[in-house]
Image (tube, rainbow, N blue to C red; front, side):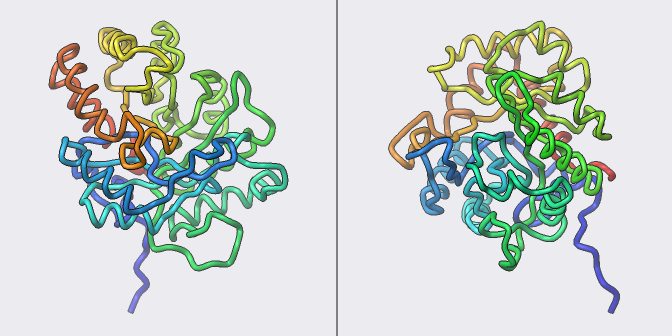
Length: 322
């Protein structure tokens, strides 16, 4: 019997339960976490599958259909847990491979010591074969769940030498698989430098997603960044400690008026235990569809909101041809 390649078709979205057609993804939270453990956030870890299922199931009843879970290698990623959430709730879960910014890896961590080639190999394995269940450089069996997007990260106002190596590795992973690259920008900085680095390494701007740019709600800057062809992912609805939601609504409306609504994605980035209702905190995973999106619909209309949550996400997270 001939071998059947596990590589999905180039227009598929790869979820932890297997590839789906982009139009099946539906209403998408484009940046979130269901499991996370990092020394950068002591005391804020969360890794209980039952509580994740509870949180996601409640959000599903409010209209959420898909979550892009962007916990990367070495930060408490749990492939089996993500599969359990998807199987129990029916919500599509797209997992991430790749690496975060320096602050998430203590001195001596293998991610800091690894060569670009080894970093890239781990990314490609996660995307083509399956993810390591423990995130460490071991010979443990691969989980059957595959990643569907590549994560990267940069520090505040700079890209460190180690972060540059990891960004180069993500570019290699993209070139070999067609997966999009989603990059953490610290407080919305370094957008142009990240784009310059990745495009230098052969990544077309349309396959780059810049996260957290709404932490720096500079409309003129965002218009310039969007004009380069990348996607801008806004993920702080309900995070009043940063700024009121009204400012984010103004920013989105301004981007739509400037003709860049097709470059926007929305998420919540619940990256701390205290942000989840299931752990006794807030705003919770229901905030996107239950509180923020109704206000956004009143500002920019149902059709534009649907395009951001559904069409933009389907395009952004579908594999491109390597």
